[in-house]
Structure formats: structure tokens, C-alpha cells
Amino acid sequence: MARIDPRNGGIIWAQDEKPRDVNLSFNPVPSTLPIEERLRRCLSVGQECIQPEELEWLLRNKSFPVCYDGFEPSGKIHIAQGILKATNVNKLTSSGCIFIFWVADWFALLNNKMGGDLEKIQTTGRYLIETWKAAGMDMRNVKFLWTSEEINKKPNEYWLRVMDIARKTTFDRIKRCCTIMGRKETESMEAAQVLYPCMQCADIFFLGADICQLGMDQRKVNMLAREYSESIKVARKPVILSHGMIMGLKEGQEKQSKSLPDSAIFMQDSAEDVNRKILAAYCPPGVVEGNPVLNMMKTMIFEQFDKVVVEREEKNGGNVVYSSYEQLEQDFVDKRLHPGDLKPTLVRILNEMMQPVRDHFQNDPYARELLRKVNSYTITR
Image (cartoon, rainbow, N blue to C red; front, side, top):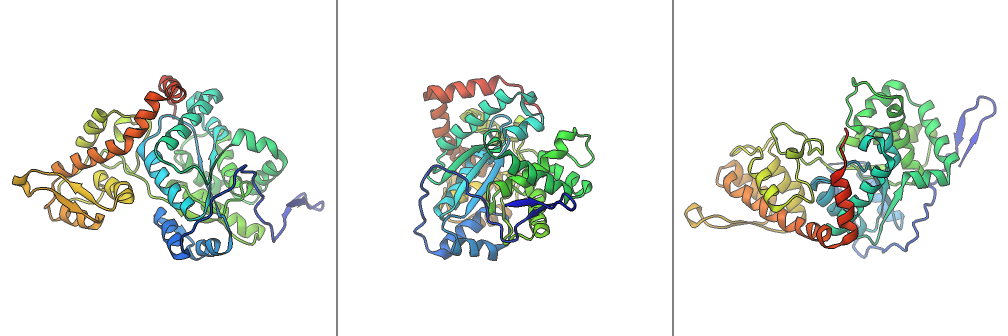
């Protein structure tokens, strides 16, 4: 795939380089949907797609396009990572894609998550996988690969790529990418954390990913991968399919955060916890901008259900059935739908969606022990 130029020590990659085959150890299930529906489902995952025509080319010309998302095992999982991720993965795999989860235990170590304890990080990773299974993720076209295992299988290939990305990228560009770790550009960081973006960019090529399906907060490093593709003149750049972030529950919070428990709904929260957090969530009457309750209705609830029933007393107009988010939003803007009716509706639906996960972690001994351990860990930023 690559050779060293003896004249200057540079790394030369073949211009017609193809993604390496990852041994997934399973037979993926092809999609029977028409290409137009496959494309529609894939595009519905992303707030942004770079580029849609490249995505369509993949679906038409590759039997099983490879999607990837990497995640740091770093604590309990909230609904943005749990329910939304399961929904997005199911859309992509039903469209004929393979989805690789890159379990970034080494990355969590570099980012000092779980106090830098690799055993705790890996236990947390297994807990996350159990959560997705219980949340209804279709695992037939899904594979979980651990960075600590896969990189050690082909270390020369991986670290050669990391070195090449570092050589072809300025320090300022890498520092801008450090926001992918939840860090600010101006924040003091360890040298290991500067290495992180080069590694995450290398992951895309190491895994042979056709589609980077991560959140908008990871956009900078995915764009770096496209820029790097140009510098080495590979045949096709990775498509970026970035999903939007689910807002935190308090005013002005762009996303739900593990380090701020009342900003997020966690997958193992009790029904009482969900009720308390949603009823206290920022949701001024008639206001759409920055409204986390409407944000969850749009990005999660209407992605799962064709219609939503808002239950309310007869004196307030009786129950209302909404067949689209746009209808619900318009009624909210016009103040025909009050937060006092919308919030209990969201509570009811979230609890219905979360109950299978609660049941799994209560009734399955393996899952229950994983949760017990994760609950005992101190979460570090």
C-alpha cells in the first residue's frame, strides 16, 4: 500500500489505493430496497453530507459500503449516544452498509478518560455495546473492533499512516482538530492529546471506511481526512455523514454531557429521573431556537415514529395526533401546544423507548455486573 522514497524518506501511497479489507468474520445482509430509498435513508441520518453525489456513487457501485464511528468508552451512555445511534445505524445497515464501531480504548487512554485506567475503559466499552444491543440496534451488519487489538495486528501500516498525516499537516491545523476530544483550542494539553487527531484521521484509512458517520463535533478531523486524501491522491475521498447533536436540557447547552448529569438523559435513568429532568428542561412557550424538548422531538421521536399523540385534558382541547414534526412545531410556535402538554408526552415516549434497556440491565447477570462496575467509576473529563 505504501513505500518509502529513499531520496527523502517520504512515504508514497499508491494513487489507485483501495481501502484494505478488514476481517469482519460475518456475512453481511444485502439491502433489497431500491437505490432511491437507500440514499434517502442514508441522507436522513446526517445534518450534513459531504458529498451527496459521492454517497450515491458508493451505494450504486459498492456492494457493502463501510461506515465507521469511533467512540471513547468514558462513562454512562446518554440517549443521544444510545437511542439516536441505534436509529442511525439501523438506517444505514438496512440500506446495505456495513457499520464498524471503532472502540477507541487507546484513544480514551490518551484523553485521560476514566483516570487513564485501561481496564476500566474496556469494561465501559463492553457496557456500551450491551446498551446498544438492548436499545434495538440490528447487529447483523455491525462489527465492534477494539483499537488496542486491531492496531497491534498491523502496527507498521497504522503508525506509518499516522506519521504521514503528521508530516503533511501543520501543527495549527492539528490543534484546531483537538476540539474533537471536547477540548478548547486554547486549552493546555498533553503531547499525547496532540497525537490524537492524527490517529483518528489514520483510523479512517486503516479501516477502509467509505463513510464517516460521526457527530458534527467530529467534523474537523473528518475534513482533515478529505484534505489528506487529496495530498496522497487516492481515488476516492471518504464521504462525511455528520449527525446533529442533541441539545443539553439546560438553556444554552449545545449537547448533552456526561460530566453534567442534569444536562442529559442517561439510558439507565429511572422513569422518575426522566420525568424530573424533562419537566425542568428549558422550553419557553412558542420558542423553537435552543429548545431541547423540541430538539428531541425532531431528532429522536419523529425519527422512530410515524405519528405522535399528545395527551391533554378535554378542557385544553383534548388529544392531538401529529403525523410530522413540522405540524407539532407550528402548533408550538402558534402556542396551540403548550410546554405543559408537550413535556409529559416526551417523558412518556422516552420511558417506553428506554424500558427494554432498563429491563436488560436488571435481568441479565452479565449486563447487570457491567453496570455495577461502571456506576462505581469516577468519570474524568
